[in-house]
Amino acid sequence: MAEIEILDLEEGSGETGEISNRCLVGKVLHSKSLSATVITNILAAAWKTRAPFNAVCWNNNIFLFQFEDIEDKATILLDGPWSVMNSLLILKPLVEGLVVSSMDFSKCPIWVQIHGLPVEKMNRSNAITIGRRFGKLLAVEGSAGGLLLYRSFLRVRVEIDVNKALPKGFWLRRKKESDEDLWISYRYEKLPDFCYACGRVGHDNRGCKFVPRNEGMNSGYGPDLRTGRAKKLEILIEEMPHFEDAAGGVDSNEGGGGGGCDALLHSVGLDDARVNEAVVERVSLANPEIKNPTTGAVRTPHRTSPIGVLPVPGVGES
Image (cartoon, rainbow, N blue to C red; front, side):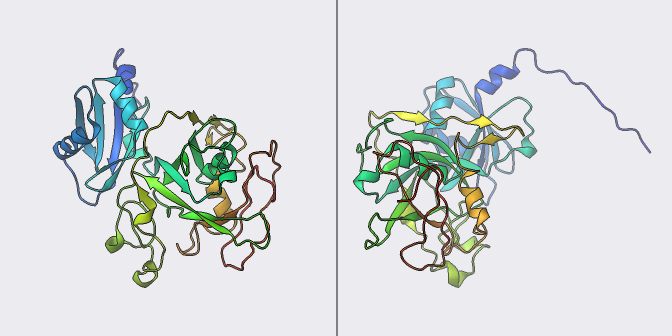
């Protein structure tokens, strides 16, 4: 039996860090292989960079993007997501020790608009509560105190998992028992084409393997979940802190409540449920005058429903 060699290899002297600072790695979720020329032509028109950039095709629609201007790289990451031929482009920073075959392109940062909230519920605390239900909350638009009435909706930046159905919204518990629950809807900024049958990004209805055709017609998914980038206003963008846990993994946010939305959905057995039965929750949101809400569970919904009721971290019962 032949012995397997173990080698120590040299690194580029002084080049690795400089290249990492100027590069991004991206994958296009497209069914056909795309060339670097096609990618460059499409993205040059969309990105409008101050300096030229270069795209190199690696494999499986994975591309290395090298920028002459570091600020171009930062702007492109901040203004994402981007799409190529109506297919999502997921971008990641190039880091030392990277092994291309082990890169995870299942997560994508995206701005989500939260529509339909009563005025008294439009505050930072509730924006954080809702944002954490996506799993990883990256940023919240708005100041630390008072109501967020710069827009008619709240706005959070989160990470979505493209392998799972997009959350459509949730039912808001009303204060009075006589009032019906209120539907709060999500709209995803710059979301490319996705499947209206199963709610996943990366394919359309014709190529869906997750939901039978007859069930997909009643999924509730449609173009209403997509919207353009919100108009830029002079509003504070608060980035949410993240930290590494004892196992070396990155937790969503401090005080995130046990692993975020994915953990909550899994705990009631909904993560693999049909689209029309999952991704819909009932939550209770804090009013701005509540200084230190306590952790509690949402009470039984006013109306009977097969949809599970999930606990909301950091928010007490109404």
